Length: 140
Image 1 (tube, rainbow, N blue to C red):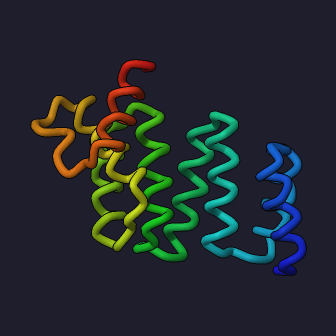
Image 2 (image 1 turned 45 degrees about the horizontal axis):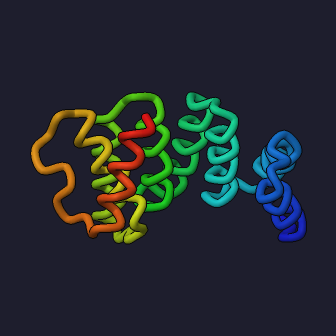
């Protein structure tokens, strides 16, 4: 992959030019089957609310690296958005097991636990994370 192609596609993604960025990343994916390319494709689909395509893209990334914590987190987040809370929780737990320390993991895990009526959903969260969870639950 020419890094300039990737950088251009990523810049368009950052600028919110989703269709153009998607087109560029899909073209890159024809030659470069990397985790980074498929994660970005999945992220674009998620932002477009095309969750089934996002999941398919994240699964392509997992075929390349089954233990990639970023892929596991993104796949779990997509399942959460689809209302598949149990599947989401399992993937988020795997992401943590693989060493992902992003605070968003704990937040989405807590949201899953709340949706699944599991005990102590806020356990292990700091005060900021608890506030974020409460705000997200209030706002739907």
